[in-house]
Image (tube, rainbow, N blue to C red; front, side, top):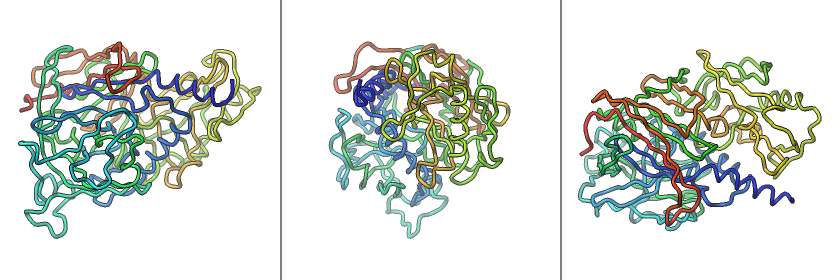
Length: 483
């Protein structure tokens, strides 16, 4: 089998694990689709996705939307949500690395009009919605987002946003408030239509990758920590707690994404690094097959362009060069007979006919407060043919200058684990879990505890092919029904 066919087979193996997902947001449901579902990708495209994403995660923002960076292109998952009254459908990227919800608007300059993802793009028109209102620059949302009045603000002027990314792409526009429509969860696996009011960005101008059709979407739905994010808006309105969890199943293709108070399983946590734009945690050491790596004492220091980020929007896992080299040397020392070769000038691969879990070491990342993240060989190794495997670890030293000192843990290490983001208590935790089973969350208003599980559907949607699964995302901390 030649290299091209090997790479193609690997993409099939990766893509078959992921598919269309259905979220429920607080008593609410909306659907999320993996952007690569049904589409053959090569190794370079996965790496390129991460590289573009990281350039935005590491970039500055012209107008500081909570001091947060933004992801590249479409991220790994996108949702179909309803906006306006009457409601129209929009496909937006779901991402923990960004804050605001924004969509492309009517009259937009250089906004994409078509997408290679097989979805119909729609431009949002505030004038066509009876519930839409423009947010002025002296509105509380605007002043809290920017920590005060914008320069030259007058009451009739809109609250504008202008984000410039590290790869040169940008999005600019103004904020509006309008109805968001979901299917509200009324009981175990029971739903009904529900509406909420959320302030979001109306995109008037896009440039760079945001204006191309390759992986274009209608916008981005951020689950970041800033006050401008949807989860923060709902929390400030007393609708929901600022906590969510996800469990991505790369064995059966299912999973769960839940917002609210997690009751079961119990999850131990580690504190977040304060005053960071992303979900950063304190890593203490790395263990390879029982051997603790000898690393510089400052390699995991937190700070600007440093530290450890937990990011489900990234495909692989990126380590500072000194960490990468030490880890790979220790892994190879346990298999000295391996003959390594490079695929696409990026991935280290080898031939191995045995059980990788028997022949390769477990990797353990140790964090503050004694929390450990264990990554097994079948997680960090990709099989691209019957006996050809590749490492998923990536050398951060080969990335952009800003990203080479960061540790970024993506889906490679997060799959098959229930990951909890407790924003209220500034903590992140995880536990190994069967993501095709169920979890339990508590409704703060009624005190009821509900089981939430993942469901695999049998066929694809009319416009999106590929393996389809169902994700339920519930806001059980709802104090009032959306009106």
